[in-house]
Amino acid sequence: MQNQKPEVWLRGPIPEIPALLQPAAHALLQSSEEIERYLIHFPQDKLWTKVAGRASVGFHLQHITGVLDRMLSYARAESLSEEQFGYLSREGQADDGLTVKQLVSAFQEKTQEALSFFKTLNEATLGEVRSVGRKKLPSTTLGLLFHAAEHSQRHVGQLLVTKSVLIPPKN
Image (tube, rainbow, N blue to C red; front, side, top):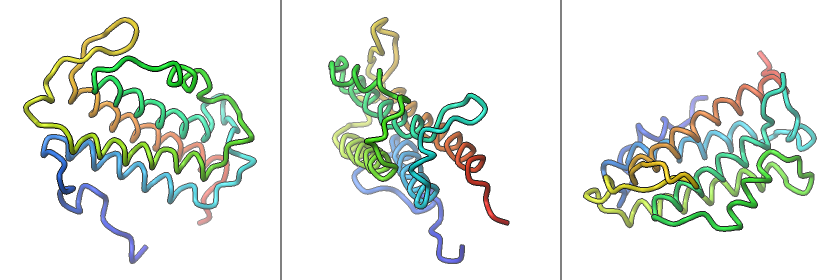
């Protein structure tokens, strides 16, 4: 791929994002670009197909969007809404009304929302304690945002393996 850009982290800082959040921003943008590239011609009829009892491509797309949304809420020191709990309960349930394009776009929009939020943060506040979930488990603003980014990268890798099994690459 001659004209392919370098990975996001090699393109330099993202304007207005605090230095400590650059790696998280780079990882989210990398995830966004990769899922678009990997799924550009992915067949709709395989969106909810599970391979070897593992999660479907549709699940991974819903899940990374949902986790990012939830981590942003926790980073803002907010509780999850009923809408977020509803989304969580539907993650991975086959829904023929959803398209690959819609799910990819939803993650890309959530990534842009995250980057906008990053721009509002001051590095001095990243160590502030935040609670996670009903059990109020301890984290920090930075911990939540880093988790959202690394979690998306992990699921993009799993999504790629699932996609490659469903549609083997041509040599």
